[in-house]
Image (cartoon, rainbow, N blue to C red; front, side, top):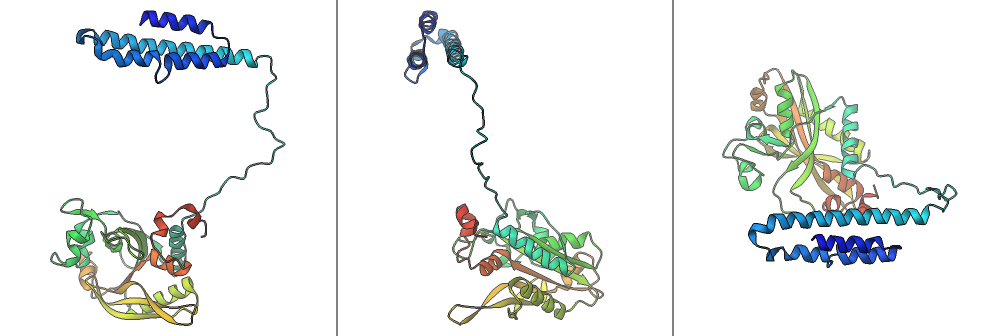
Length: 328
């Protein structure tokens, strides 16, 4: 090692230009250089001597790298010391306009929805995406034997903790800490182990709505969702309610909106579920179900964004390149 360092140092002292310096670097510090060869031969060294030889090899490599850097700097200085310094920026050239990003189409949709409901007096609430079974199921009147609780249909972290499968969990958390009246919307991500295709994903976004007060009726729910759909999709949009079932609302309905194809035909698209908050849910959060009533709804945000912008595949929202997103 000492002889190799002496030989390399002597040769380096005679280097006078950058080409010779690069040749020296390849000879001694390159991937097939003499230092690399020395390191590869450590296997031939007796076990008792390996620590000392390994240390000497590292010191050799460090010393030669430092000597190379110093020589590189000296040669650079000699080439430029008599040359006038060039300006770092040529101010006569036209500037480069920076690329400015914008909000993702899903974020834009959430903001638009929140702004519409804010005009109706709703405030925005948020909750954790990692939930316990109580808030995701029990408090929402979903019994232990209900198929919605099947481990195959949920992302369980352990026996009692899971990734939330619906934003309805937020309404429970809000009511636990709020005295009526309550009027909130809760946007956020939810998770279900669905097979990914053009209309399904294992992660998607929902927006939950909740209004609890004295005298709230199904008519209030119908008017609220009808006015929202007209504000978001256009004043000519038609809506309808279809009877349905959810454990946490009674009565329950699905809300649909009517779309028109380019060929003049029409078709209904489901936006989400809704209904009057079940008395059991109100009692769970210690609301007097004889005094208070309320409605709740859950709408799919991707579904609304796809219909409004004529997006045909949900995967475009999360798996495409920025050229797709720049359209919105």
